[in-house]
Amino acid sequence: MSIDIFKKAGLFVVLVLAQALVCNHIHLFGYATPLIYVYFVLLFRREYPHWAVLVWSFLLGLVIDIYSNTPGVGAASMTFLGMVQPYLLIPFLPRDTEGDFQPSIRTLGLNKFLWYTILLVFLYCLIFFSLEAFSFFNWQEWLLTMLASTLLTVLLIIVIANLKI
Amino acid sequence: MRNLLDFLAKHHHWFVFLLLETVSLVLLFRYNSYQSSVWFSSANVVAGKVYEVDAALNSFLSMRQLNTQLTERNLVLEREVDRLSRLLVDKTQDSALVSGMRLAALQGMKLIPAKVVSNELNSINNLMTIDKGLADGVRKDMGVACGNGVVGIVYLVSDHYSVVIPLLSAQSHVSCAIKDRGYFGYLRWDGKATDIAYVDDIPRHAKFKLGTDVVTSGFSSMFPPGILVGKILHVFNSPDGLSYRLQIRLSTDFGNLRDVCVIDDSVMKERLELLRVAEDSMAIGKE
Image (cartoon, rainbow over all chains, first blue to last red; front, side, top):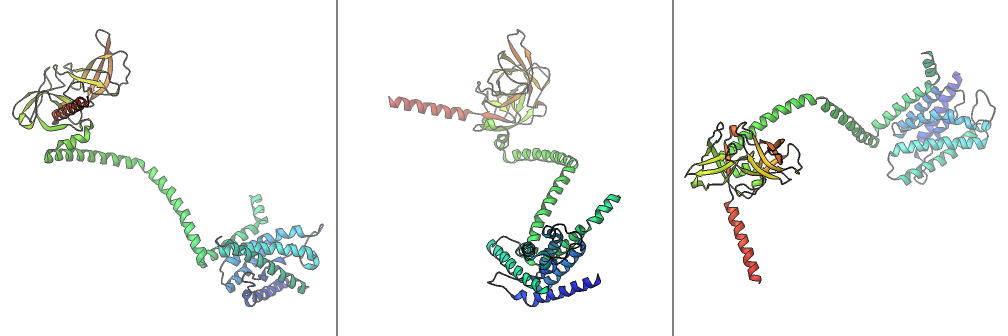
């Protein structure tokens, strides 16, 4: 149990550093920004206490905000993602699985994992960029940013997930 | 109670979610200037609406006290208006200004303001004296009215005073009509109450309501049409049963009459005569 927490903490730190030092400076074509820290939330297993998911997500969002200079935006979006992740994992589970389940490319299969990732990342980017812009003034830019970031993030997450095995 | 606690225990993550989400939103709206400004402007609208409703409720609940205050104020203001208009009449001698404000029917008339110097109400043939005479343009048979209605007709004129036969006299017979209906009759006083008079000879087919105004009909040359005489109080059958007799409450208070105006429409008469002559001469000229 405590090993799990340490592992999570380790992943937490790695993702934060990667995001803050590397990915925050990537703006492909001026629109796409990879948000790889979302990977952290994807990995929560089925039986993990909901409140703990929420707390982890909130803290991650908070720390990312500190580095990205967007107070509250990441925290709000991450908390929301933490809320929905346990529920959104269930449709992707293979039939007849009871008890604990750790989502990964190996256990879900690439196809399912891909769609699972796309769904969650899309949701996250939707909330994140909406909160950040907070107006529909330049909705084309908002849409483009959202979609491009989703794409790039999903790509990078799949890469990381593959490595992780 | 147990069920409630069980429910809370089962879904405790919702509360955690709410808590954390609220914290993040607070951070969001506090430290980002754009979001902060949006929050403040919309929060202002919401708060403004709430305060508006609250103020409306409060003002409604404090109506009673406001009403008493307003009534008192009304009385004070009415007395003030009375005092000021009397002052105005004294200062400018232009009661056309003051009476004109009240007697709309007298627009275009020349009004000679006068004060009542002697009055009597207790005999069958009462007479009234006013302080204007020949020198001020008053002539016999001119009508006299006050702010509230008809007063009487000038009977005798000397240089500086005139005697008026008021409505409260057996000899008074002002022609009046029911407002907007046109049915007319002569106003007579029966010598009893000082605010009641009677109009006879209203035809039985006349339709009118109690409380309708009775005004001068304009059939006599003494008063222009439309000056208020009183309100219909009651309808009786005439002694011979062939017509109605209206009981009128007179609008003029003869008890405290002080300011009156003598209606001088000799100017009007002269202008009308001139106009008629002009039209006739043009008609002749065309032939």
